[in-house]
Image (spheres, rainbow, N blue to C red):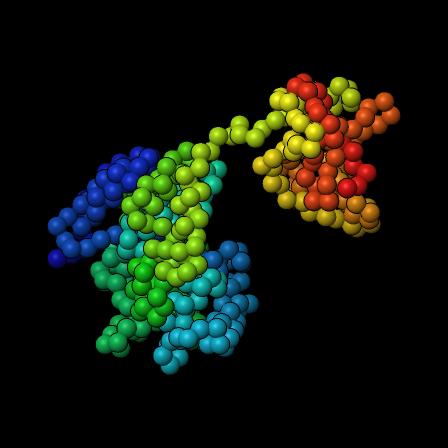
Length: 404
């Protein structure tokens, strides 16, 4: 039985439901493995355009920089020294692979990329943190064919498992030499099974690819004919419905994080997804040309706003506060200085701005009261605006920024 023999995988279309997803997964599996008792690996990514690149490769731009700086060895050393106090378990002895798997699972930068043997788990990872702004993706990998290219063997080795032969250990050890050893690492990635040294590794059915000198090793393979890597796209407008289907099918935060934190997030998500998302809810204003400041944009009521009412309920843009003296030292072009002048709040020696001017909400367009133009809204100490009197439909909102 040769797990590397495969036919052409079927054409892939957008994923609009769990049914679509499982049908396409079944087609890929049948093409790759036919009647063999083998399965692909899966990786969910919340943004479809992200490459298959390990976290360590996002810190430095070339592999030579990683070797010259010894950054990976330094990170491994610090994690191994400091980790035992934070956990009741740790790898037996000084097994480099087990420590490396733990590092990846708890967010330390490594050359590992997480995969799972659970197709629905990968789908959940793809959509769980996507607010619906962009397409998500599930990558599907044939790890046996990958290893046929990398180590000339159509099998996946668990390098830290008991009973593994020394020859097998030596075969994969090239991808994780000892720390500070002046190592030479192969070019292509390899697939490996971890030992289940942490509960999460087991519940998430984790497996890993270890990447070598080629920063885009798997992405390059995806572009080849008869590829061993495929990408399934979940369109942005289907992210929320697919997440709802997964939760109804028993796949949620408590499934992949089996502890009280995971349960709390699962309960919160269950009820938040049941809320209707109508963009018009609590919207009482809109932008249009200002009457108080000709040539500028102003904020106008589209519903009656009662005295004391909040015209921007639901607006939750964060504010960053900058010292005026530090801002004045910046050599900014006039167009940029105008952004700070027109879209900022003043409090003593600081100005408050959106975290990025590309995130301006309606409230930032409020115009200030001036001679002959009285204010009808005023912010409180937390910069939530309240109506100073009843405001009629079609009336421009003018703010008193003199302080709460």
